[in-house]
Amino acid sequence: MLSELDLSQKIKKKEYEEIMADLRIKLGELQREAKLLNIPIMLVFEGWGASGKGTLINELILPLDPRGFNVYTTNYLNQDEMMRPFLWRFWVKTPAKGRIAIFEKSWYRRTLVERIDNDIEGNEIKSTFEDINSFERQLSDDGNIIMKFFIHISKEKQKERFLELESNPSTAWRVTKDDWKHHEQYEKYIKITEEMIEKTDKDYAPWTIIEGNDRKFAEVKVFTSIILNLENAINAAKEKAEAPSTSSILQNNTQCNGDNLVKSSILRNIDLSVSISKEEYKEKLKKYQNKMRVIEHELYTRRIPVVIVYEGWDAAGKGGNIKRITENLDPRGYQVVPIAAPNVVEKSHHYLWRFWNEFPKAGHITIFDRSWYGRVLVERVEGFCSYEEWNRAYKEINEMEEQFINFGAVVIKFWLQIDKDEQLARFNERMNTPEKQWKITDEDWRNREKWERYEDAANDMLIKTSTTRAPWTIIESNSKMYSRIKALKTVIDAIEKKI
Image (cartoon, rainbow, N blue to C red; front, side, top):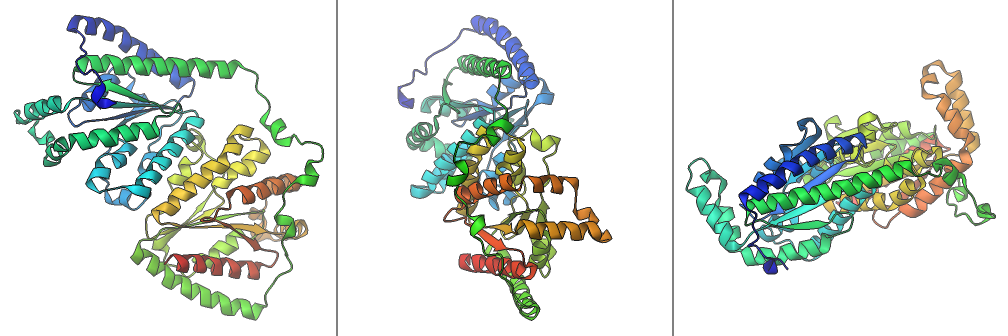
């Protein structure tokens, strides 16, 4: 494919200047429109060394408002990045609504330079392509416009540009031994680049090959492609805004005749009568907490990250549970992340963005007091997202957790189950105890009135996101002592299995 491209295409200087004058004006206009419509844009530039990626980006940003974009250059992993899944450093750089993120080299470095330098093959490269496709699809589904460019030049042109750069003392530093090494591997790069494009050229994130031997031709093609894609995206956004929409809440509440008879249920079959004595509780609590302290050190030594997720009914005992798990740990080795309604910044990104930001470094523990499952629980029930958004979230969540596990993380997920009578008793206790009144809010009472709807959502969540590698553990929590011991033992067992 690449070897058959016509790299001799050129544009004369006068024609180039006339065309580019109009294209620059148009691009600036489209940036302003995209901002008004809250469209996030991602531009990816890959290509050969000395193919002109940096020059193209410099020309591209000249007509843009500098307050509306960020440019990121991707090089070798730093120590912080090495301690997290490879897509982490890109998730945290995804643009907010109305902004542009430009990547000079990107997540595709893993399928190109790192693949050759580190001999990444087989299942590892296969899973890399799968992770990239899911990453781009999730962002596209959330409204991101993703455009990917591969700047192609001939081997002869690359050599010519390397020599030109080396001949000038002020630019000689830009050509390294690795550059010349990769130049010698040109034919090998051709093969893996073609595979990369084949595996990741999707309608939601297409590749555009840019013939880069002539810089003026390359620039015109890049500008033209971006403008056409943005015009289409902006027109689609306007049409969508003008079209009548079905209420998300109506969609969430709609039921078919007989729906109650055929619903799948897990939570109704849980035996909530289980309990332990106070003496057994004290004995096991001391034993397991001491064991957790030893395990924490082992995790750090082996560089294993741990993600613990707590979901469950209001007043089910998540806080007390978390306290018993962390009570004997070194606070430098863990963090607890309480999740509330997203703030303005978080709302301007993909809903998973804020959780990727909190992924623990290798060797550390992060405990989420509520989590990304809010999308298929409270956001579903309360109509804070559309039917399409929460329905596709099951797959998105499973993919994210799979990537965590592929990196080497232990993922532990708890649903704390209590019955409606127990919840009422705990609500009343909080209301009648001055030092606990802060724990009960009007929202808790409102949520209680929607118990059946939340139970349906929780059952769907448990069925659709309990995977072989990241299963849910349901904790019978009418007895707080039993609940705490079961959670501690589950965490210990999961980590010891990994170790």
